[in-house]
Image (cartoon, rainbow, N blue to C red; front, side, top):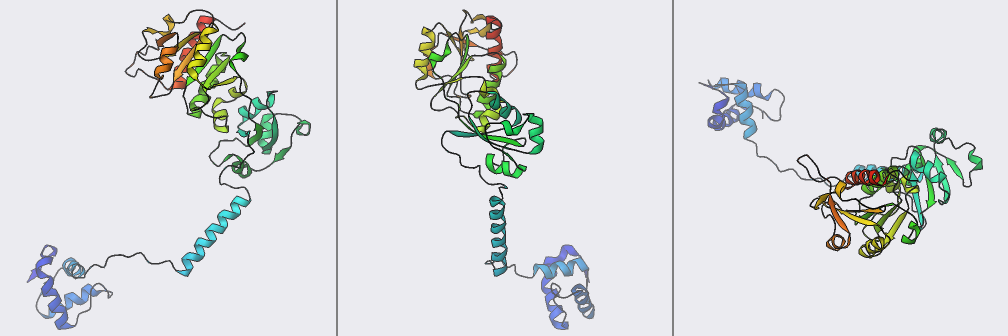
Length: 341
């Protein structure tokens, strides 16, 4: 008789009996075992297709559950080598966490950020790390004339200073954080941005860049629930951190009230505002108040601003990222105010 692969389940017992009777080898362990099994079947006048004999023999063996083997001395040796390699890289300044800085200092990086910091008389720089190529692009002239030490290094050393994820473009500085301003420093300011617990440094940095482009005079934020000055914030601002004064308010509602008293029209941006921003702006001093994405303006903030306004969106999505909403609002406000004197 002949049997195909489809008859494996029915013929498995027969196959085992034949192999025991003829002394055939185990097809799982011996080379060419399937040939031996077919030969044994032929002696008894039975012929099996090769797939059947092989599959039957395979299915006849119990499966042993895999177990995780304990580490061998060789495994421990290679793990030790990997740890030593990581330690040597850290010692050479090739990777790892950012360097710890003294309190009150920040690591700033990127060509635009560093150039703007060097041009800011209020920024105290303590040292610079740069590649030769980045220094050439920065075009600072004689580095020996700079009032702080300059270290010519390779990129991994800057990675160790800023952190491996920073896009430093081959240059970084260690500097003092800028001293925050107060509302008394506003003077004759005409256009102010107010942020109600906007915490993402990338959004705030991008917003600051737009603010400087639209000639905003200051940024007011909450003392808590706002990003601290950092390399991430400065990089996103692309130099704007050196041009836009930041005022930290312990109580934002009180700060908005003071802006009202100083003659500012404080306008809170809200998607459900009664009128579009274009129809709301009035007067010659404007403070635009923006809330965090998702939460929007807090209830106390909404109650404190002099007006609520919306940005009309013709599309299916009515809301924008806070930094995108800010640039539109700033454009409308600046168009109303006119170019700064």
